[in-house]
Image (cartoon, rainbow, N blue to C red; front, side, top):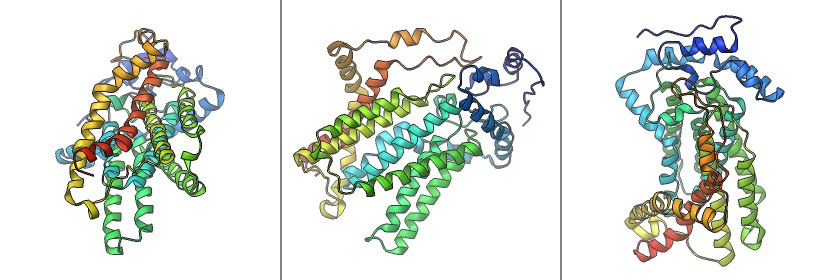
Length: 404
């Protein structure tokens, strides 16, 4: 399969480079963030931020050749299908549906830890993506194998899939190895499954042409950092009871909104910030749910298979339906009515929409204009509502349907 790579002349001006890239065969490279010449970023970054980017860009300049050669050597139709669909295990909607299931099967602590490590690995990887503004492997020559064009509009490093996979895999390794109820043959089987999951998700990002090696290594570092911080915090606060402190839910909400409103501004439009808003909202919703349960002594824990039998596997049918109804039917109308109509927040969504550059996206990605403030708060509250549904309301629904 022949391909044409873009060669940039030495000494070309910023505008000349844009013309050369836009005239290249295949997909216009400037439609993807991170591919503009250095001058595009220098004028809009601090000195430290720009110098850091310039140092790291050396590791991404040739990543397309490596990824392309790997695809040429290993691609088959069956592998395309496998890695395309297994990439969904790191997607936004996958976590919305799958993360609550351990709660409903009686493993609340596992889900709590997963939410923390995933939420902060998504935030930190997204922050660094927008801070560095590094490109993904260029297409062409690389073929991007994906079910969502949405993800191709993000910067490259760090890989959020790698961050998530590393954090979750380390968490499962830690829990499996420390388990007193599992015998070692079963532990080895479970550890093998975790390793297989990790390699599938991480290698799949290179196979699918979505990331290079810098993206994977930096993502893995982010995931490991979030895991070790979570374990350290759990140990340090092992005797902390949030229900004893009135300030706890307010601190969680304020902290969540603080780090979101102080997120670094990318140079080009990059949608990964929306995932950060969603996950930090989930973390705050979890904190508020835990606080309510501890403060008022509610017994909402779901029993496990050993004491309840096969009917525990019917709970996800009720639970997933409840989450989907909240997220896709009720939440948006309820939250924005509360914010705009009742609390009189300024609705700046139309203002941001109309302030985008007029450059067609198929030619050049637009510069970043920001996410509307009311949308940040609204999305934050919508996703904060999911743990409340999962931890507080679903156990009540299970009681009504005789599934608890």
